Image 1 (cartoon, helix red, strand yellow):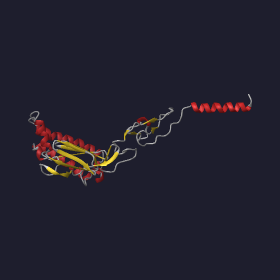
Image 2 (tube, rainbow, N blue to C red; image 1 turned 180 degrees about the horizontal axis):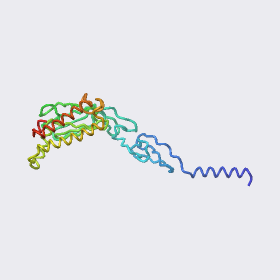
Image 3 (cartoon, one colour; image 1 turned 45 degrees about the vertical axis):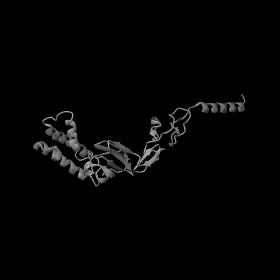
Image 4 (tube, rainbow, N blue to C red; image 1 turned 30 degrees about the horizontal axis):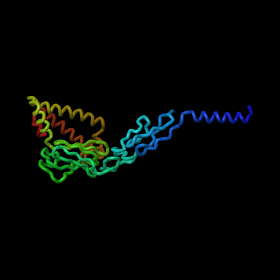
Length: 257
């Protein structure tokens, strides 16, 4: 075989080998639904996300994991985060799109705040007095809300950070007792049980708060309570422990808590 034919044969074998070997997939370009996703090593063809889904975490093991139609962090496209107070609906960032109603009460998210109106017979709005509220009332202590759900006595909101904050009237404890009593009679020692449960609950919380360093945190660490910090949380925790001990010893009225 001549040297020229040998060289041609080797070149042909090299091209053939290159074509048959495992291909290197194109890197994923996170974007709108229907874009390519990086294929696992050894495969020749990259897969494609379904419409409305996106590969936003760069992890091939969880390909197309993001719902681009409803993710506030990846709204309509990977990396397109909605601003504070906005929610993602149908792939677009919108303000005031979350609304919830229960009975004759309704709440809506507007620019990150929760406002409610309606019957308010159970003082869901915690506005100081029961009774109808025709004008929307802003719920204090909740910022950067993106979603709200409400019931007759309790409402809860989800913030852009994924935290949950709930609101209800100050007499919620009495409602809980009344709800239990509507099913079965309260046990004779229910007052002692209540204080014992509160004491046990606060001891458990105190251990967690000390261990996690919550009492050393500044005001920016906590979601609820304007100006609240670790010192005020410590004061609140000690006050609850003292109240539980006094209530258990003296059999105090739980509704005076």
